[in-house]
Amino acid sequence: MKNLNTLACLLALAVASAAFAQDASVKVVKETKIFALDESRNISENSGIHSMRMSPDGKTLLYVERIPQAANQNRRGYRLGLRNIKTGKETILPGASCRSDDFLVAYVSMHPFDATGKKLILPITVSEKNEPVRPGKGQMKLGVYDIATAKLTELEMKAPIIFPSYDAAGKNLIVFAMFMGDRGPDMELSKIVVSPVDKIKFKKIGIMGMPRTPCPVGGILPILLPPGENKAPGAQKSDFVVYDMKADKMIASPPISSASRLDDYNPQWTGDGRYLYYMDSERDVQPDGSIHHKRIMRVWDRTKAIEKSITQDL
Image (cartoon, rainbow, N blue to C red; front, side):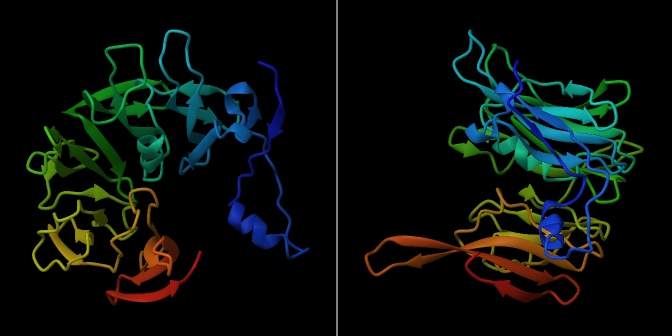
């Protein structure tokens, strides 16, 4: 396909680059061009490469890609790809494409790479037809993907939705397995399980919800609970909790509004594991009855279990 332009992907944080632009003494060096924009990666049509995650060793880029609709398909889909930064070689990861990018974006925002950057814990979508899959319809599998050999080792787990991650140190697996009932998620069957990486044996923890970015301090996990399902001992009305997986108990319930979208905006920790930054949304009813959602950034102090600050109207 004909190249339309060249995308210069800098191996530096975009936010940092924007800040550095105000300081003439700071320069970005060793710029590396990664992707060429073509018909399948036309950013102006929001159909390009997005939601990237660099491996810990800096050698591999994991990304979500929108793929063109095939002639015998009813709609286009999204898939996961890997790019070797040095050689430029691209690899499409195992599994059927998804109908929307929501699930894949959420997966990439976690810790999909192991500590070495040589392996991925991978949700494998399965399709009986030549059509993109909607997560929750059908079955998903779980596997460990070796990047160097392209070998997939399937683990003994299947569910309509499998949402996996390594912990921050890459020593343990965290997997949210969601099962579906006639009216949506089956809260009794759905579960979070954990296992050491070196000896896979999954153990269910005593709470169920959507794991968010694991804390750099071992065993600490933020969890977004389904509405009305916060039954953890000592839980407040919040549907967002911080859980100690080693002790198997909830240790805090950071403030959150009923209009929050933490399923889309993954909270992030500071490197020392003390502060948790997360996006929230508050409903503001206008005089005419319309509702305006105010975006706010909350900062929560894990060591003191208090909210540190709030940034309004983002």
